Amino acid sequence: MTAGSSLCRLVQAYIATGGNPLNICGFLHPDTTGMSPEEGGSLAVQQAYPGGGAPGAKSVQYNDPLPESAEEGSNYPKMTGYEGYRGGMIDHPGYIPGRMGGRLDRGAWDNSTVTRVLHDTRKWANKEIKSRLQDKEWQIIKLSDCWEQLRLERQETLMEAFGGLLVDMPTLDEAKFDPNRLVQVVIAEMYSLLYDVSDSGLPTGFQPSPTLGFLRFALEDEPGDGMGLMG
Image (cartoon, rainbow, N blue to C red; front, side, top):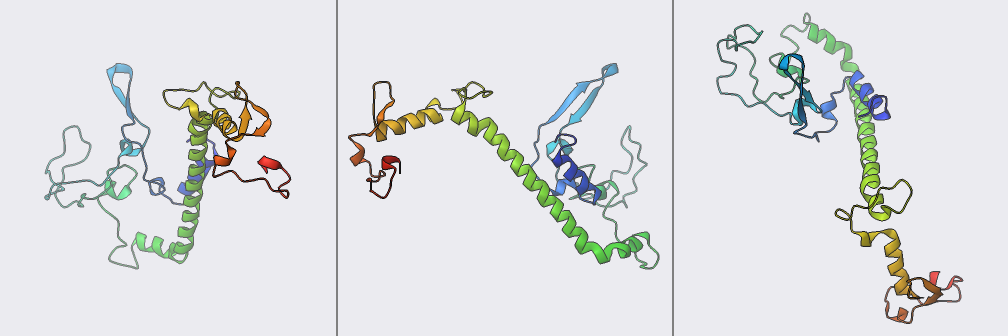
C-alpha cells in the first residue's frame, strides 16, 4: 500500500474509527518474512504482512498457562498458573486479548469499574459506530478490487491483446502468452472468414467471401440495414 494514496488514507480513517485492519480481509501472503543483516552480525526480521502472513489461533497444552518459571532471557516474571488461557487466541501482536491474558470483561461491580463506565458512554452509539466502520470496510474492499482489476488488465489482459504492438507496452513474452491471441491476429482471422482477401491477407475492397454462406453466424443483407455486410 503506497503511503498517501487513497487506500492508505481510507485504512488510516478506518483505524482511527476503531477498526482492526485484520478484519477487512483475511487474504495475506505467507512466506514474506525476510532477514536483513545489521551491525554486530545480528539479523533483523522484516515482515511484509502481520504474523509472517499467516496469523492464526494458538494451540496450547491442556495445562497452559504453565510452565512455572520464566523462559530464559524473558522479561516476564515467573508464571503462577492462574493466568488466562491462551488457547484459541490469535497469534499476532495486534490482537490485544492475546497479549493481556484474555478478553477484558466489564467487571463484577457495574457502578465502579472503568470498563463499565466506558461501555455506558458509547453503548448508545454502538450501532452507528459499527455502521460507520462497515462503510469504511466496504470502501476499502471496493478500492482494493478496482486496483487488482487494473493491475490484472495492465499486466495480463492488455499484454495478451497488444503486447509489443502499442507504445510503452513491453515485448510479448511468448512463453507466457499465445501470440495467436493478439488483437491484430484475431482481426486478420475474422477478415479471412468474412471477406475476399489477397495473398497478403488484406481484404480486397471488403467484398464478401465466397464461403460466407456456409457461416451460420453471418446475417444476410437486408435493404433496411443500410450498411451492407457490416450492418
